[in-house]
Image (cartoon, rainbow, N blue to C red):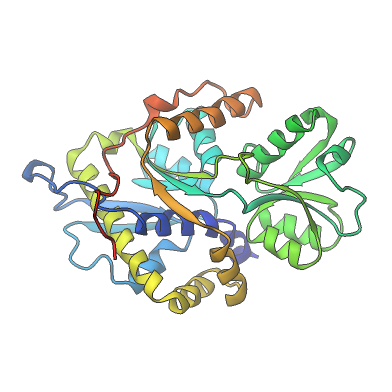
Length: 334
């Protein structure tokens, strides 16, 4: 069950690392004053990035030390980042903004673009629920928590259908518990993310709606603490380690079967399912430009409207675009 819960994060982790593989230089060369030499960098992970960089030997020769802190989900990683126990972490846009909107002093350093299709609302094949309109008066399970990406999709889908959150009853379940309840028929409708959406579809469930077509932004966000970004050496180390993850993913693209095997070993899932999730998750690292910040702001405003955050977030003031830079024209990562 613990491995199943860890696999909830596979899409975000794949998106983070594979997206980095699609970018150019992660930053300009460090000056002597901002050399990362002697720095110890602690990376928050969900059991996926560490095996990848180790398989690719991506950290060989790094002029700083790396420590790994493993978590089963994104929210506790953000709590650890806020407490100064880790130096960087990642999560879906709503999860990241939830942490920021409830007091965490974080900065956004990169955006990871997917098509949003890995988050969905599914119904049992025997259910009479055929569309979001049919949810009035129903109970909908949501994994993993309030304000998560699945909860955001549900809120948006209800609003688009002319329904309010009070028109349904929401039941929050951790991913493994949600999967068990849905598989046993105790839950009729479930809002969740891959691989659980894929598993549900494979068992005959119907997708009522997914996060594509603008229902979600499709963004995941990489964040760091403001304190670390004010430290030139820490910032240089963050820039360098992201570039090394980029190289690790170049390796993974040239060794697809090995990457799938490593990922399956890390998550405890079957290789065919891992490959399907990877295939369903097109991604691309994008700079936090004006357009991207505007889309982040839309998500932040929706979360405030839903009362998932206690304060309004101004996305533009939460961005530090100097850690990961856009690919240079004519550059190559291959």
